[in-house]
Length: 124
Image (tube, rainbow, N blue to C red; front, side, top):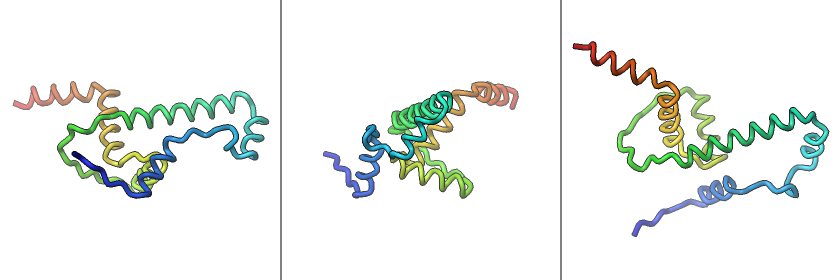
């Protein structure tokens, strides 16, 4: 039987990340400014929000259970700060985000895989 030890902070992150914002919980000042904004701007904000929710859900669904190799990437300070804030905001672990990003990169650029294959064939 496997038990997980969770800290109070982990439980709070998870509960905050899963909550939906109801219209009654919205900031009244922000709601007024959104209503008075241009329809195109409001639609763009909505689309942006949907886009980032989609990518966060894709990262959460990314399976890292069979990943056994360790990688120690060297990242700049700004990226580390952003990844730490992303973890606080969404509960996504840094390793999961990096693994997803690399996998997504190779999916989007299959020419890299073919370049590696050609290079190894011409190596001899």
